[in-house]
Length: 160
Length: 395
Image (tube, rainbow over all chains, first blue to last red; front, side, top):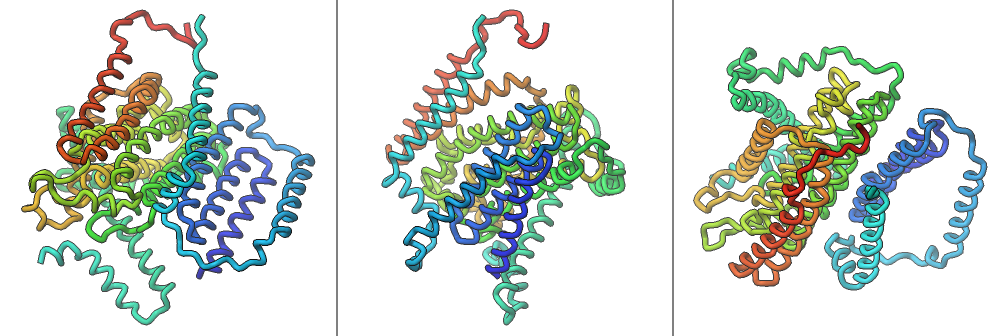
């Protein structure tokens, strides 16, 4: 059952990712990217990491995908038109993929069998965030607030 | 006796599953999920049909006319006639539309709306999708609505659709903040993101009379009102139906949809309304708990749906009473009033918690909310500055 789900999710995610990279219309590519993110969230669900999966859907579908779509819409005139093959992008993608593969293969942790852990509840994650990791959390909060205020200042009406 | 009536649906499902005894677990799991999905769709699509005719009836009553009264007794079969009409209507797709995106938008919006219904506890042991972070699931899935609305607007390749989608996303993003932040005090006080736990925390009575629902605390009632208003906006209903303002942009992102696709949008709007009201009932109105000890013999799911109906009536009532708001006023309201008030709710809930959750805590949290409310309303008071309106983009 689980392996069947894994294969289905993998196919959907990879197909969506491939579509995001190759589709000729930018908007279609952005929407396929959102589908790929849903697939990754489904992976987390399958692995029992509900919180991470939900956070992924929340942030990447609810915010980042909308942001990407809006950015495309507001900044480009050729939204509906096709685009050529981007060689620079391909080189960067291959380089990132190679780097990641290299670093994954070099790590020691692959050799060690992970101990069987009980599934983390949302409550445990919350407690950890509020005690052990409270300073990083507060720093991120401050950074986001600063970004929000910065955005407000950018769009503020100029006094004539 | 009352206990068996209370659990009748749970027992019915157990009985159906016991017919499958001996088959592999995966089959039982799938059948169990299918029963849940079927029950959810049956109940809420019936409720959708019912509310669509009741809304027209109530609106008609408010406007001193009869409303639908031709099909069936008191016009109760009107939804069937409407459904047949919508099904057999011609489905028109604009020639220059993005066919795939145009088709997928109503599918996505309906799927998202139905998914959010799954985490709400409808009665004792009656949560269809028990998940640790149920509240988080609700908002995570619900936030995909924006993408669906955008797809509808962009896929239609129509300037009214695009404008409507832009307006919808602007207002949904703005009001999602107060919507989520007003949930936080409840989550903080209960210490759990599971809807079942939140309902369980509201069991019992203070002084043996007043139920321990969060709506009876100062922070609770403030958060409830803010949540309800944000919910109104999220479901794009009057007075916040700016994205589909008929007099300005035809029907917003739904302009280019006809027939059953339009009906799907309509259905998604109502199901979203049920979901937000259901969550409001769960968070603030004690979920499926009875309001008095003597009334506890009435099954829990009836209490849930009674509370839900009251909230739905308020939705209709508001629609019949208030005119559409202006876009800029609505945005100002979200960022300058709703958001600070939502944050105040968190502080007031903390004050309530640390002063002992008793009468003293009740009064102190009331003081916090009253001070911020008065300060905000003085600061935002524009009555003194009446002047001719200045237009930025028009003469």
